[in-house]
Image (tube, rainbow, N blue to C red):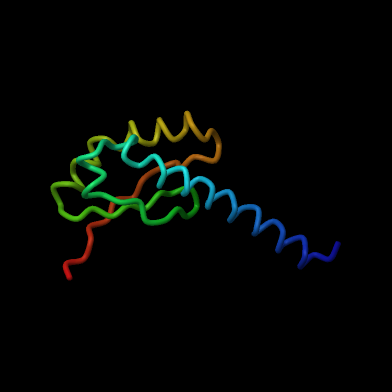
Length: 95
């Protein structure tokens, strides 16, 4: 198999895994953080096993910081080695 084709397959497989993990996070977000937090903090993307979420206010970003260890632990239980290692919390821009 040519090297380019092998790299394309590897990238597709790795990206597919991120997409599967991100889909799991999106589908279970409310269960992971609770309904109140889920209304104000949303998952955005997964890159290099870092889940990036966006909070609509500093208060809700702080609330998620309080829960983040529990969220990561639950994801590791559900997804094993594919789970995000950490969560990066960003504040939404005011529009």
